[in-house]
Image 1 (cartoon, rainbow, N blue to C red):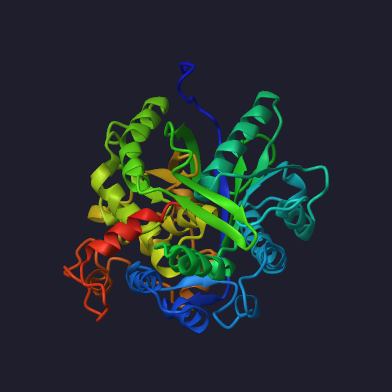
Image 2: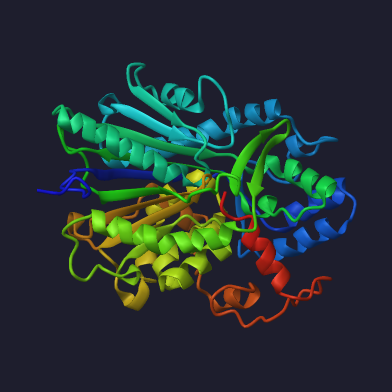
Length: 455
């Protein structure tokens, strides 16, 4: 019997996954267009626009472009205007991501028992989850929980909350089919960020990193009617708050959107928290095979808060970019979509082309999920991948994978071209900026990127 501090056989599994990105892919020059159109040149603005060329992001997914009317007003849009766009454009993404997850789970909407959701880019009552349920046609008696204040760690916070709800139903011998949803519309706040750069003369690169996305999964407790075979089994999780860091990282409401709260301590705090959190997580999950003791024994689904978060994890945990291949892929092709990113990374990790990039050619059976959020919170979980479903190493290509292939998104994140063009990327041959910017020392990039990438 498992001790009170360990997880036993939980019987929890992820049986459906879906991610939905909006159609627009913003290249770095989209931010530059808005900055030069509406703001005077200044040292801080020049610095941010220079850093914008070296984030490691090829494109950011967005509900609009730099020509969208919302970001082309005389001033930054109000929170009321941002909410209207979130509801009109964002909720549709969440409905589609949810439909994908439910379809893969092979369940009927009537079997859904709970909906657990999160966003940090909107606030309203009722919450967006009410309209997602309504759009899907889910009955009003389904229990809903909407998490607030969890930022980029929101996806794993949703999964942890859903797992505890599912275990409650298991104790009552009742089936649980929980729809987990994360939705973020961040790119509409570009003018708010540019305002702060101009007015405060601060180096703020949120406008260069954040993107829009909805993602969803279905968690089952295994009781009741059959579902699709598990994609991942959820074996355990860990949640920690780094003491006395609530003033170091946040995301606060403002009349023109939300503003990142960040201290220079954040990158160091995050890196230092990884090893002890991982050690605690492993102690709580019994009966892992003997080959799974070190961080490099696992594949990693790391929330890609920014390039230095990924490279910092490599240094702190002794893992390679290939261990986090799906995190790099999502970051490069879509940017940081806050809470919605982690489910999308989990979805991408199980695809055939990601398997081909596994370290040493060996796909791991076990995966560590990890994300940081305000608090500073550290969310981790251990997943067991279903490698033998339907007699295949990985599940067949899903609709979402097919759409990615058609869109030409199969970019090799570890390519020499990207490594050579992005200072700080593993394998980069650049020691200094080479695009003729007025900022010659690579250190300014490292310092600025280190400061604004977690939420």
